[in-house]
Length: 433
Image (cartoon, rainbow, N blue to C red; front, side, top):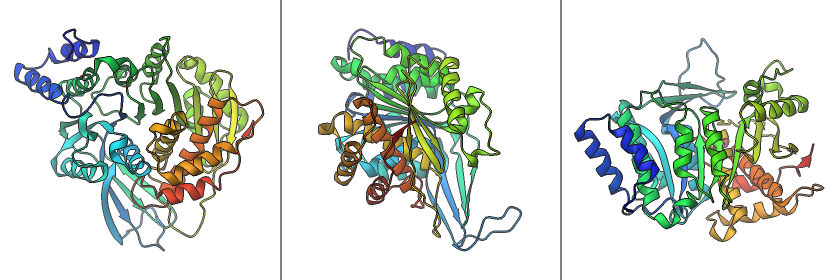
């Protein structure tokens, strides 16, 4: 380690100063031990999903609709991983069959008890036992929350338990782990992680600027960032803006967001009676314009990747507000669909494809996905569209196909690459709006 303390280690020191001497020593020892055997940040895809969960699926008989107020008897009860960060990691591991070629680091707080132990075991079996996925995972004192999906023939309902509080020493532990990874190769520190995906809510005890601070610590001049969260957005976007001030900056940032959520944040009233009705093009344009002003997003983001349920998705180039329409495949059929985690698969697929189109020589993307993505990218024929926008439009189409593919699997965010390819081949050619 360099003899000069980094700013992130100093931040960790300030947090730890309020803790007991024994706790400080344990946190520092653990953080420093992470430096050996885990490699640096520059080769990793870091997934920040602080609000981890243990998932239960309560599956009704195939012909039984979910009826409020009725007694339901399950055909099966399944257990698995939950939480948006874990979902992203699961999808990425299915898209990247060679686990060693693109190391994952999952930044999260995993609670105590049998549920927390089960989550750690499931992550080991899914992401690779002995890998570096847990380099940024902190076991905390509060109990592990459980999310329960009740799956009927016509719909799925999700029951989400509240999270326990994250304590100061636990946050300090996470910051120390990040700094230990970043400090393991000082010559590459400015490059940051290969990619950063920031997902979902934060547990109680996390300050509003937590995601902004983590972004500052993890991202660098080369980092591709996908955000699928509306928590702590202003400090997070401010952190991204500061990163772009570097003359050597070659990274990028995309905000993946639901159209109705975008309208809500921007204060744009929707004409439809519910989210199921979708958002009009005028409403979308107004929401993007107001959001860019309210959240000072113009200097932080490159694109908005906007989903709208069964309605077409849209990609917006932040710099000039260019708007592109992306059709989605109709999955309506007699089969049961499993939508929990589908949005997380969209984020994961978009990131995986974006990394691939940026540098295919370093991409671990499955071969069948490579071919389908190249075919879709080559088929984009929009007048005056630049190469960067064509790349991210193809990546977003791939991500949307991953989201659709995950609906065909009972387990959260699991995708079969054959389904992804088949669905991507059915996506209509995108167009300018």
